[in-house]
Length: 428
Image (cartoon, rainbow, N blue to C red; front, side, top):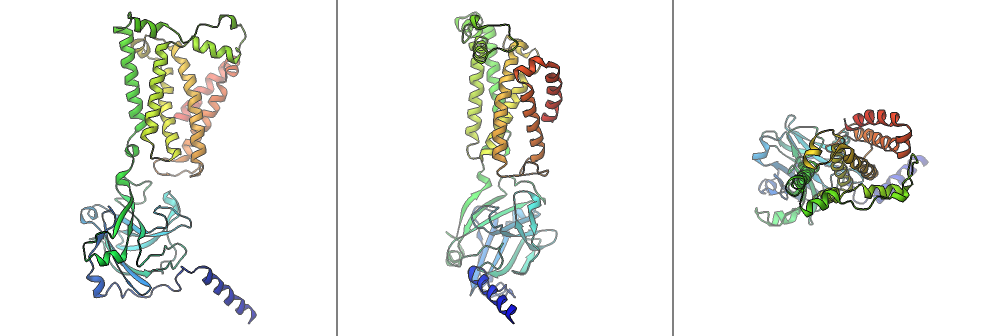
């Protein structure tokens, strides 16, 4: 008797602590079959190809989603559901209604994360009752409570706007959404009913992948890097051919940033830091400085193009751009003598500098990425798989350590062998 009383008290406390949780799940779809619901017209959900209509009676609501005919012909699935903050993933995790053409019925899926393995079918499917479903028209209607019946459900307002997320695709599972196939919008049930079929003002777009950043579906590091190298090549050809004997050509091709540090030069295996710095400036021609400025400009342009992306995406893309130019100086091709009138021995210093810069960029990228994904995850997160990238990161760090001036000079064979092996592992 005492145990029973304790259980009743605990149950009462849980109900009191969760005022938005529905006391009971629905048992029928009578609202969906009513004449009032059938008389409603669908309203486009934001800028999506999904039309929605809803009717509230008491504390329950009937909702119907229908995919636009032009999209339904090729789509194999679509998903829609109320959202806590217009994001796919929230805390606690929320669910959406998924409809698959091959099964022809809606199922509740839990959005636990941004990888496909985290999007799973819920074990309990009793918080709603399906009214109708059609695989040919890619539509379904179901009845649920306005309040959340489970911890993964999101409450729906009968009078105010509610956030919804939506997505569709031609295959399942997916690793990332294609441009224009997902987004978020608000829907106001009362406003839709009052609009008398027009749906004006009932739904507004919150976010959509149709307005994704320009770089989202493009290889921006490759594009920016290619343009930057083309500019470098044109400048090099002009200086080494048309302007070679002009005052400008002589200045850029033969004048260095600083004079040689003759008094600081020693026969020590490794020079002092300030001596190394002055030697570097003495070995840097103004024309080479121009090439460096073009590269810096390319990095700035890439960052500007990625201004709408997350920080870890920006640092990752910048690392790729640096990697492109990192490889070029060690390519033993006649391109350097043809385009820039220079030699491999003079160009190799850029490889060392870019190696240090790229390592810094990669460290920043790894730190930022570790906050949103497990670095050892061996499945796709968006368009990439984190584990191979983490292995490459370890290789690059090892290469940087073994490239330290003292190690490189005193143990050149170790440096050379590990550089060759680790570079293959890191790049592949």
